[in-house]
Structure formats: structure tokens, C-alpha cells
Length: 190
Image (cartoon, rainbow, N blue to C red):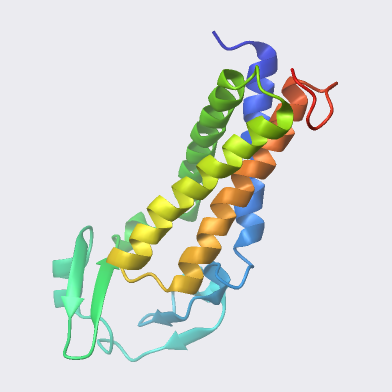
């Protein structure tokens, strides 16, 4: 059963993860570095992201593109490139929904970090955090390595996002661990 202290620790950990990922968008591999194309000037997300490259209608998209690609995971091959395409219906692109889902995923990640910290409670703090760091690096290599390999994610972006994952987990776990066991030093056994 989760107590009030655990709930507080979980929420603080989730907030740390959420805030870190918000800040990380400004890093050299974050969303702020994407090249944004739009065939419509009414795209508030693209306009807010900056650096908009407006293209005449049907330069990059067409009714056939929307019909065949929206709402699906797709690939597109040309003579010069191979692309994975993930697209959503325009009316479904709601930043509030994305932020809400991101908050839920960070709460889930914080819950898993809390479980790991509780399971490793007999170890000294430095070892608990070392295990979390190793788990973060493993998750990063497994997920972003696969995306760089199979989906063609640029290596710089994959390494950067992988570093974001490992660092954010370690940061959140450090904060959470200090809230769980505030009186111990870095390598004192609990």
C-alpha cells in the first residue's frame, strides 16, 4: 500500500521528470532544433516552434497523403530516401492532451523509480542511485538505440534523448531518495 509520504515522493519525482523534459526541449537535440515545414499558415504548433518553412499547398502533402498516412505508422521510400512517418489528424493535435499524457507517463516513470528505490532500500544510497543510473542508460540504449537504427532517428538526437532519459531518471531518483531517507549521507547504508 502506498502511504502519504510515498505519494508525495512519487509526485515530486514526476514533477522533476516533467520539468526536466520541458527544459530539455531547448537542448541541441530537442524539439526546438526541428526544421518545421507547413503547408498551412494556421498551424499554431509550428508557428510557436519558430523557424517555419512555409511551402505552397501540396508541395509536401496532398489529400492522398492525408488519406494514406494520417493515423498510421507508415514508411515512404523514394529513389533517394527512406522515411518513417507518424502523423495524426489535425483536429486531434492538441497540446493540452499531449501535456496531460506526458504528465501521466512521468507519473508512471516516477512510480517505477519509487518501486526500484524501495526494492533496493537495503543498499547504500550511492548504490541505489548507481542501479537507477544503469537502468536509465539501459532503457536509453534499448529504446533510442533501436529508434536510431530502425526508424532512422539522427544519431545526435538519439544520443541526446538517451542522455535526457538517463539524467532525468537519476535526477528524479536522487530527489526521491533524499525524500525517502533524508538523514543519510550519499553512501551511508539505509
